[in-house]
Amino acid sequence: MKVKILTALFVLMISPIAMAVQVKAHVTGMVCGFCAQGITKTLKAKSEVSAVDVDLDTKVVTIDFKEGKNLPDKEIADLLKNAGYPSQKIER
Image (tube, rainbow, N blue to C red; front, side, top):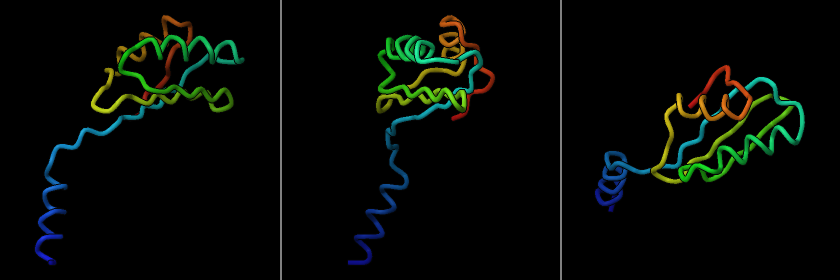
């Protein structure tokens, strides 16, 4: 019994598991709900994005990606910049 459990745990540890990715982008210039709406609309237009949360108090945009999907940091920064809100830092 212990061997089966350990074997299953080992297989899970070495198997490539496609996990959803979350990215936090610190942006400047956001001050109102209209700002949040524009950022959300811009990012959700990308098929890889599953959810966007904009926190106006902390100036952080949290982007959730669909399982197995992602966008490069440069593309995220470009999308935010083109929406009018340059990113200062992107965290993964």
